[in-house]
Amino acid sequence: MAITPDAQRFARRVGGDVGEGIAAVLSLLGVPGLISFAGGFPDPSTFPRERTAELLGEFVATGETSAFQYAPTRGLAGPLEAVAARLEATQGRRPSDDELLIASGAIEGLELVSKTFLDPGDVVVVEAPTYLGAIMAFRGYDAELVAVPMDADGLQVDELERRLAAGVGPKLLYTIPDHQNPAGVSMSTERRELLVELARRHGFLVVEDVAYRELAFDGDALPSLWSLAPDVVVQLGTTSKTFFPGVRLGWAVGPAEISAQLVNAKQNTDQCAGALGQRLFEEYVRRGWIEEQLAQSRALYRRKSERMLAALERSMPAGTTWTTPHGGFFSWLTFIDGVHSAELARRAVESGVGIVPGGLFYVDGNGADKVRLSFSMVDEERIDEGIELLALLALSA
Ligand SMILES: Cc1ncc(COP(=O)(O)O)c(C=O)c1O
Image 1 (cartoon, rainbow, N blue to C red):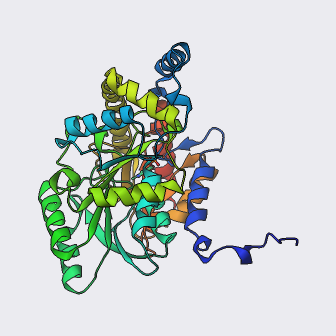
Image 2: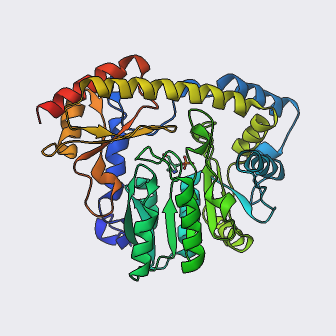
Image 3: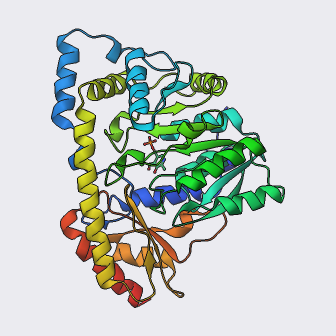
């Protein structure tokens, strides 16, 4: 029987425009010569090319097989040990063996958590704004998303408390507490403490995404939610911004019972994260190379951020505001009334500048006056020119 490839056969969950939104953003990156503040990609100059080549050469020369073979679903023992040791060093808590698993990136962590917890109609609280990939993951399982606003100190936990008191009953709460994507702000320590207390009191699980945690410009970090409350937090981490995203590698750490279910879910997702990437990362950590790369990356991103903020200060129309990141990849811009960011993004591409309109980061149609600016991958020498062009467009909007 011939199968017609028409969209009517697609599952309901693939409808909607969020997927198209991400595709549009990624396609912006492909325009030749574009000064792109669009993608949250790491700067290619941070990629450890020579060291990767050296390690690959060693794996071949020593006849190693594990890097080339399937791995256990939870992860290879050595890489698990390397991640556990790093968690202990950077967050002050060492996970037990049954709490940690290696995932194929934080995106896969989101998929595994969603698959494990979400039935249609289950409520997930997200930050407003939040990471588009998370919105897609939760929507993919027909969750109902409830957005709680943020300010300069991250998620407004007092507002969350009011919503909980008013009867909102989430199964999960998703947050990016450090150098948030897209807002570029971090959650204060007081709010972190209150948030995990609310999770315990109201019986929801906190999903903590630490994608940018290790990229504080001064190297300092506030206590992770997982270290504060390992009983009610699953932490999703990634090596994409600190090693390189080509390996698609990350971790999920949380209560043993949940971790076991995530391992089950992974068995029919990809069965195991790529062993080659796991072994490369393990050696990278063991030899202390990750710390060297982190120091260089932090300095690079700090320089780029400062340059972009200075250019914004010089050129943006009066009344425009933006966040001041202390790490990560992003600043979040709010225009004065009358500037429509989706329209501005379209005109910006025509003028050779890529930006992401704010609406993509909201679940409730907000964000028309906002824009995410990523300084991570844009050519340093072209930051001023890009921001000046953007300011001219905003002035004429
Ligand atoms: C907040 C956040 N989480 C997760 C990811 C994706 O991480 P990974 O490359 O490990 O899938 C990103 C990447 O843009 C991100 O910004």
